[in-house]
Image (cartoon, rainbow, N blue to C red):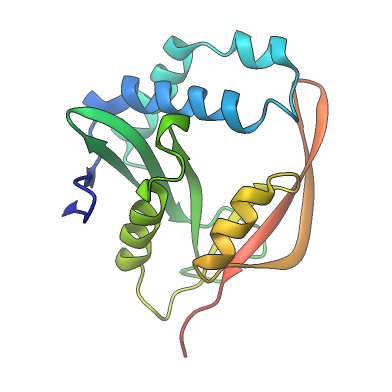
Length: 175
């Protein structure tokens, strides 16, 4: 898959060669988005080499689909999605596993273009879910603008010994 957007961003399918760039964006985004939720020492301890290995494994195993957004030879963001991992998921339901941008790209339409590309790949009759931190109001607003709504299901995860609440959002299939 390859899509050129109106703002000169190229969105394409990721390859294993993208693992390091995805890992860099992943950690930079976490540090920017979750500084008010997670301890600074934990965020500082996140290792790009470890995350690169994780992304290499994901991309080699071809678990779901991963897209990268790039401009001027630089990776600005990525999105990853595939079959839902939720216990109560209906057959065929998809899940947006991750969508992250380098904070320098926030507010430039890159996330919108990534999301539109993901949703363009999802058949209209297919439901899609995602999990987002309850404290991440910016993300809540973004997901609502793309047709996702909270469905009332929450879970508590522990990250760096900090309990965080995640809220499930659902984009209902078109009937």
